[in-house]
Length: 249
Image (cartoon, rainbow, N blue to C red; front, top):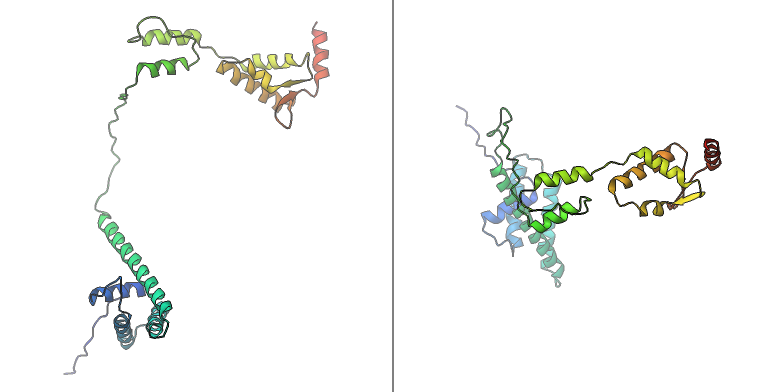
């Protein structure tokens, strides 16, 4: 009966840093003060075992081996400061890599994969009740900011209906057409009009919006033009406007 050949499996590491961390943990080396000689010996032993098993050694593993050999050799020279600096750099990189592995392990433990799933979206009840509370002074300020001149007389509590009545009584919408006429009339007496002066006398929001839209509409139609600095508006065909006014009279 033919003798069966013995075989064993070597652990596979993601890279040389992963291998170094495994060797440090296995041989209980101090990661803050690594013994390069011991680490290099174990690292080369692993490389030799990989070669015996016909493993294709990646270039980064060979590069790390050369780096460790250089640090060990440089440490024996009269001025080992450069080797010490390279050692500290390697120790810092290993510490950062170990922290990344710990974080990755925690994230892997939190991942539930396909353990949780929802077959059909569930509509959750939503409470639309406004639960925040405000001081009365803040409510008055907000109400006055709506464009109303004064608060309705009477008690502040329970006057929602009265507030609504005041809002409806004072609320109005200015048409864009009325502001178009207003703007054209400005050119009866002036060749150009200051945009700032046009808006200075308007305090109502609806009036300001309507005037702005009227300027856009006349400019889009080519009847008015705005100066390059955006301060004045003028009419290219003002003479035609004046002639039409005379005919209307």
